[in-house]
Length: 478
View 1 (cartoon, rainbow, N blue to C red):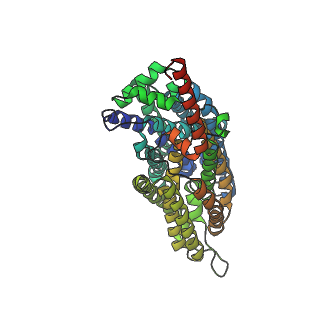
View 2: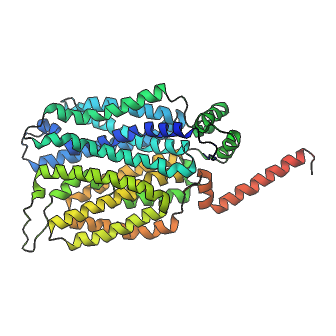
């Protein structure tokens, strides 16, 4: 949507809507890493021998599969849910799923636990799709980057919370209630957002009403959000030329953007954007190979040290995301993403160089993770929501979860080999991304489409002029 400078009185309401929507991002972040942070709770009754590392690793990967499978499912169902019942009700459904999934996970029953993981994953996938779309559709183009960055900032807060809660695990026998708290935590944020959506948020986004040809509701929603004039002008400009459904993504209006988004996802996920977060403890615990072929003995093998490092990394990622939201407005989407890829590949050189110095290598790996949070991870959801309509963002979430599921298999390798994979992905994708990407800062969805497809814009302009001439002929004014 386009806003003028006079339409400032609705900005406080927009900020409330954005912050409320992103309570779901905090819940999603907690869900994303709660098993990584507090797997001891589940392992206590799933693994007979706590010292059996092979069984523990197997169960960890199985539970990750169930979560990501649920997220893929959530991305798929988000297409009909968002398009037919709306963005607001989609968030309500995500909150209900979060509550049900969390309650199922904390029951000491394997079937209930696995089902709970799938349900929590579905809520995760639904939130990852609907929140960026919702924020994009209620935000002025000149603020879409800053308001869109709330998603990653809040998601990073969610990533940090489970590790802070598990500080209690520094004791030999962590209290059971503390373990369960980590799995209940997403419920608190889901309930808070659910109550606000039911009591304080009356309308869906204007774009949803436009897509359904509900003119009166669309204009009422615009007036509620904008609180200014030129409402009908904005309404008619945004409504025109909209393409609905998944099939339209591969037509002339969106196909270049779809290809670009798929490249961005492939690059980010196979360079460890999210999988590194899930597997930080694994990377830290891996011993580097010394010249004589033996494994280093170092404090990083200690689980308490790993937990403290995860907390430090979580705080650093949060600070990086906040700084990234500032850089995003100054540098733009394209420059920040490509700059993050280039600096990441530079850091990989030093990770490989310090193969025999574990402590230095771990420090550089942490810096690599912060670079990803500052750039690639922050840009992707904002850029995708600016490039594509809701059905395209659903496709983005599904493909992203599939790539994340596949990329986690790489962590069976030593850190040095793993980051060489990351470097190869960066080298293969950086040039196509540079060629395809365009800056979307301050542009509406239609303006972005016309920028990517100038021949399509020209055809629509010619068609519009022909229709205007026909109308004038009918009025006998020529």
